[in-house]
Length: 383
Image (tube, rainbow, N blue to C red):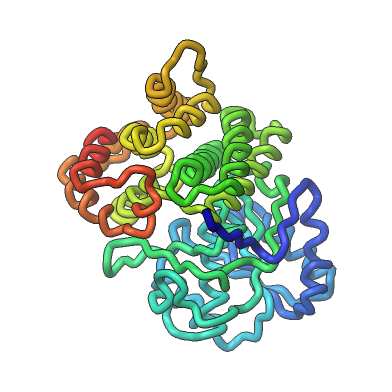
């Protein structure tokens, strides 16, 4: 098959790599920098650590600390209006996917004007934006290495992605020390989000040799370290490996896509404001169960990596046990197993099933073609 690989300008990983940030900004000839982060990351002092490195390089640095946990177009547009008269030549997204996606969106709006909704969809961005550096403080979203930014559209009650190679960061800097103080609930949600990325891109229709190799390694790293990172956050080795696994999963799905889990997570997040990682972790086993016949050998491999003892099992039996293993992992790290546990009423399932079918970009990558009845069944099982 023909496939292409697209990556950020540079990826730097490792403990202590944050100390190279000033040099990297200087190489870009940056002078005026805006750090984009959220209130939690700002209050934890992580944005100040980033600012310190940039200020030492003699750069002028401002901080925008109001990125939303689940970013929306109205807030993005307001931020673009707020900073439209400034002359920033570098944006640094510091935080989870919300902060990095907000930085990506601002990069485009500050360079080209308009509203965020104008660029929703695939390849709607006309050209390069303001250069971006991405620094994740969670091990999960992979946004630091993707060309995608996701925003809620409250008027239409949906989430929409801006997808363009112009969203790639000039530098994705992944220093695991930035995740060391991440609280257990966020560690769990972001970690199972990364696992979902790896499983979906591995089993999806656009999977290729390159993404498969990365996805398998990402699953190995995440499964081997997620429980420890959640239950013993002071374990630096587990934190380091989770950061690496999430990074590798991000590169993998950034080049072969995600599928039905994310398609279902979009309406769940839009309607009930369920954090993205929690939505993915809850929905993953139910989507896996529906999808087994679409790629049975790969789902059996996933089961083995999830810890299923394969001896004496058929592919079908192994893959089915993988569904239970995914549920057990979610339960172990505190991810709810049922929608009713999140306060989602049963009456909302039909509306969300219909909304799911509109996410054609992601459903097209699903290993099994899903009908509306299939999607209804997934929602019912998850409830």
